[in-house]
Length: 369
Image 1 (tube, one colour):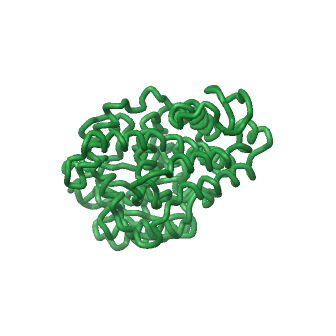
Image 2 (cartoon, one colour):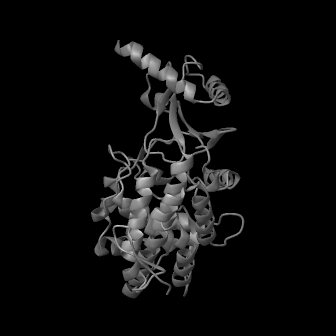
Image 3 (cartoon, helix red, strand yellow):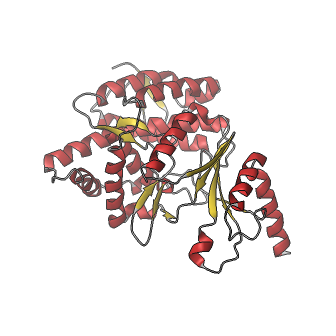
């Protein structure tokens, strides 16, 4: 019974792979002389993806050599339907190819109309707990600085604020009146404008940012301890403080539990932990940063957690309407907005935001700054 069930499951999963992708996969396999049967591809769904469906594809080989055997795997990424509002897919592919040429990520092995095939990286994907490991966290800080310093071809203008404005419009278009009221979408454009005005003052480090540096997008080679950052869908030029803030916020998440949408902000890194991360990050420039330089960036990063909450809150609303992946997007969005309203008065030194909303998400009163 067990083998029959496994066989049936595998066939069902293979049916999830588009026919044009299967043709590319079989064509790739025919070029590898150790594969016994190019048609005998095994499909294994990978958990934790919330925008696309991701599968590992592997083939049986005629070699007992473990390292040889392991090389016969690839990754298939099937793009989520309706998520093109979040990013420009052609830009993402250009970024992917650029990163590959820089030796920064997996190689692109093939494209089909609804997705792509990528090289399988021989490294393990990090877990939620890894982000709190001081050694691994230091490696991530160093890799992040390297990523931010990449000279990506094309314009180097900040895209965060325009992206947020576009997402608000889309969230409003898709939402029911009840949802729009519950999430205070009518106030959101003013809120973004106020946030942009507050956060954009003074000198800011602008760099090429990943914008989604959760643990599932970070891989580590256990032998060399080298870090690889993957999945560049949301990547663009932005203030580096936003990228770091987003990484810190992701420490509240664990997408591999029975309730992957539930966030635990008691896991948000404390002041000393954030300081340590940023000291390592800044020291990558070759000189040791002063205490005041570290503390200034700590302060900037904390403010940008507000932008991260709005970013993923709006993402959650839109995804809840367009994405079929099994994830409680709306509940996730509610938690991000709740955290936004909770931290906003303290971080912006403002007791009278556009909308005074208490932590449980209910409106207290309405007024303008």
